[in-house]
Length: 514
Picture 1 (cartoon, rainbow, N blue to C red):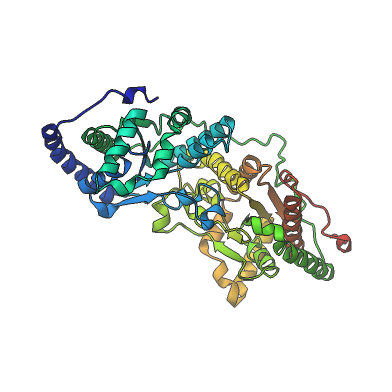
Picture 2 (cartoon, helix red, strand yellow):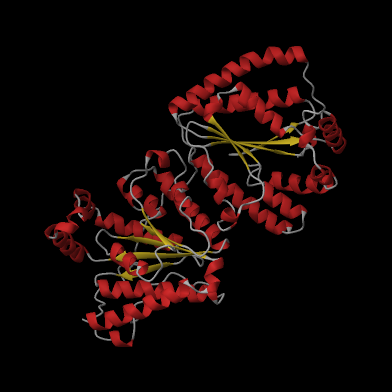
């Protein structure tokens, strides 16, 4: 993939000077349009060999453009905080907002290449990382981002000359260290690994541009012109990136589905409830203090019909934990800051460190539920969200995050009774709104969306537990028991089971059923 960059391009001083003035003016104009419209973010990856001019090119872009609307993100060794989260977490939280340009000096490509050169991962694992990156970048593009990837190339001799030239100039000598010269010894390995990795991640939606790094003026003009043309084309386009996805039609031939088969009559009387509640809260408290949890973290995701009892269940979990150990994240309509980022960004930012718990009261599944049913996003957006959510949760599981997901299901009749009860209690009136009443009119549409969600996103790493929630006592105990059993299974190294719709009794003392 590097052959085309070994041509020996050179730009003379006069030609360079004549080209820079109009290019700079056009870049500033495009950047102003970008900032004013706030339609898209621009993600620029600057990668390549040491001494190929990555830093110089970034400095030139700052000189040619308005630096107030550019952010440069430099990544080296991960910090303790970053190592306790998924590898992509530090890049996710640094993504530029719509209307801004984000330049990544060191990116999600750096670690896989370094790890392969150091024989820390196999080529098979490298290919798996490439596939993961391709899906991540596809998600960014589908969310409207412009992704530009530059690889600055030097021949081995060219790199040696560049390092010597930098070292001999007092103004740049500080940039060349023993580490850079040691890296020159692995040049051939870098060529092999990077060439393979770039070919695997050279996609139509985010292609690589290989630029010869020998001549500073040629390199700067090339990057500037490509950035300008890409920004102008993207800003002029009125079409959002679309994938050829066929609409999904749900058909329950025999009228049975994951919700219709639930036994919503399951109950647990008050006396056995108190015993079971204490038992499972005590067990959860022990598990949260288990030394093995210090190397893991827990994400609890709560979804359910309005008035299904999510808040009450969350409070029972919190009662078993140290308040310093967990955080409850209530999810409502996205803020202006969140709308300027990819959909999943606002959830990534709340991922817990090791030994901590994050409890989401409503989650990233809003895209395939309320946004789908209410038409708040395009059909293509919620259709591709299933894959993006599965990728997101798979990455969490790979990094040691335990994802436990609950859907709380109640009947229409029970929901109506709870709505009316809330209107009669002063401190609960805030819980019931006109939107809640309006949502009841779309009950069937929501039930279809829920069934699709459970079936398409219940995976081995992050299965759904569907909770029969007409009886709050029964639901709360089942949730606590499921949480404890999942933690125990993870600590013992067992694979998480598939999606659960267990209706077994919470305990021997809960035999009585209505």
